Image 1: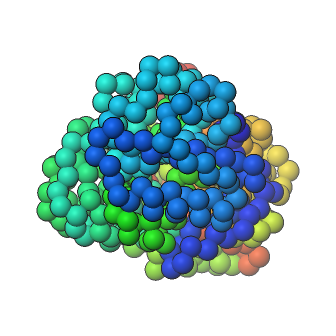
Image 2: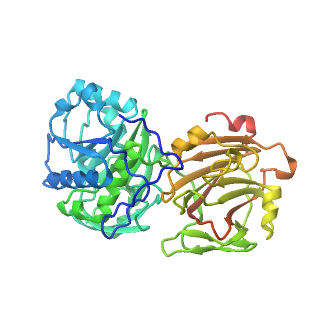
Image 3: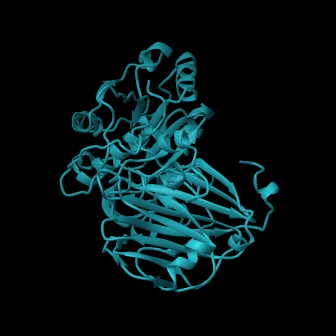
Length: 452
């Protein structure tokens, strides 16, 4: 079983062409990756299971991983599970594992294994609390099969990065006994006003991920119908979930609540361009650098204590693109004011340690071993969290803390400043999505470090 680590900045991959849907690009799973598809049922049996197995085998052949399929719970032994980078529960129902098999699977997850739950995987093992936590929520009920609108909340995770902000499709839409949002990272949710029979009071997660007990867990509520497994977009959704569960792709799967958008993909209200160059705004809500050296900065307000999250992607296959996120600078239409009075969290896979991705540019390198494990290659999306509390600055890449820096320069005080995105030059192309912020209580550097 491969450890749940990522890929170095130099790792490159081929595009995965899945029909009309935009599939996640970048590195595919390693050729020796192996996935176990488990579809035993002790309750209702979905007639789409054979279609699901066929689709997963085809995705494995395209994506470079081997798929074994079984309904035999005897496969759940410590020795056998060690052969697999992820286990897919494909519309399992009821009690499908005995106590010894459950212990073997728990140990597999605790050792870094991956779990993928599809549709009725949430209708499984109600008396096994570990499994309930791993799946994220249990099935409660469902209305008739019908079209619905899915809101894609996370457009950086490989399971959803290739989707539009709204995804219209037909399926059997589960209601769940609890809402997983507080303990899992919601990737997509249902618009209950778009169909009949939703019972989750307008907050209806339908796909999510989480780091759980040492392993990785991805769940999607889609996949009831046979037609689901022929849909290019749904197939890309499954492939992305598997890639993350096996550790072939990285993403921030920590719960995310309380953020508000600074840029939601439609409007640049409150933002201003400083200096030469510009940012283009694509129809899918992506900002991309052009020309420079300039900076797009949020002029509507400054911030003191906050968590800033944003998604970014480099275009050059070599990783030789340059951009960064500026913080803590005073209002100015001169981009060099940010350079001299703030800090830049760098995006550049090819420079020296203190000037490469994750660095506080020119001041402190990221932890390069952690950075390399967490970093997706060019062509794939990454997520930064930049957290400022007092003069304490920390940086997470795809959910992994890679930098911890304390400012001691009064001219660069972080206690009140603006946020900006650099457009570095004609040869550089870096894209950004979904810029959001959560303002935090003011804390000192000492108290901010508690609870990391």
